[in-house]
Length: 286
Image (cartoon, rainbow, N blue to C red):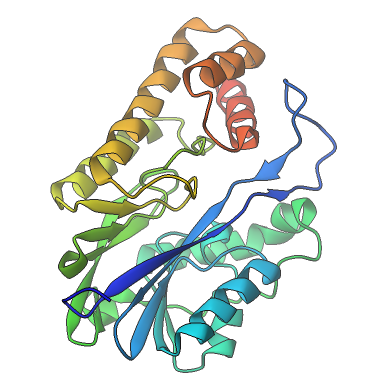
């Protein structure tokens, strides 16, 4: 426990296999990226940020929360991608004192994601995702502030990152930002929604995050072996977006783009995200 009475723990759910018949250009299997769930806790209470995707992942997270002996007061989702909120309702059932919270913009996107679930998520992860009703209340009703044992954590809307209506949770007393997908940490970035100016908007979101000046950032997708240094993650996320722009201008085929990105980021996890993004980027150019 830190001297301020707050601390945090990052629970990384590992990559999982997808029910997709195709393989990557280099022969690798299709997988979903590792997902970060953050537990911020005091002496008696805790807040959970970005509940994971599958029932098995949620069970592991719930067991860890229970083991801490803290009362879970809030479950906060930074954005509406299903791997950051689909298990929120099931976790709230396990911890009935916890209130699910997201921004109004994220809640609107959650409803869209829930309607699209059967056509995407249930096909790639059949039988693995629990019921996912949208139960969140708007953070704006709480003045965009979650209070944990007297410490204020600010909900900050940053606009588009790897999807629309994203936000971050700033815990200034911990010098920490839980950033969702605004930054990535050693994992290939999701670029499917980055067309039509999306990458420029993403850079603006990164700038908002950087201006908070936190020393530590939790990325929504991270290599569990990496630290939480903010400056490094911001620099590497920006570099990745720049590489995408450069290589889209020079590589004529999806396969060549994919291989060029792998050469520039050979140690990044989950090349499946890169290949799915590559296919969307090149389809959007035609």
